[in-house]
Image 1: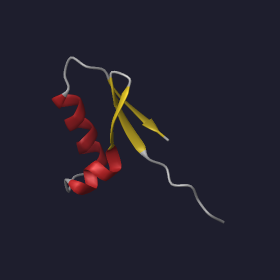
Image 2: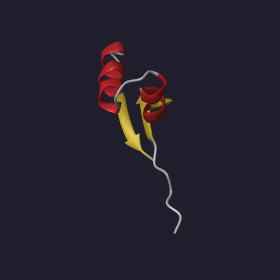
Image 3: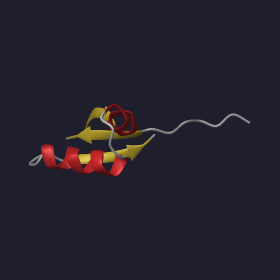
Image 4: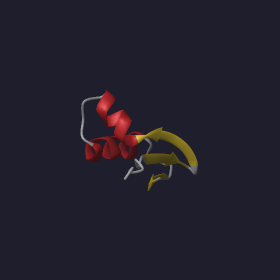
Length: 52
């Protein structure tokens, strides 16, 4: 049985910005830390996360 991999995408004002898991791996941080950093760096914008 083959499992489909899921990805967590960050959207900035409705536009796809970055794949959160890969970004966290590249920067040697956890997914939670990466999400908090994205929200902190983009104050004044709507940041959403979706699992696809």
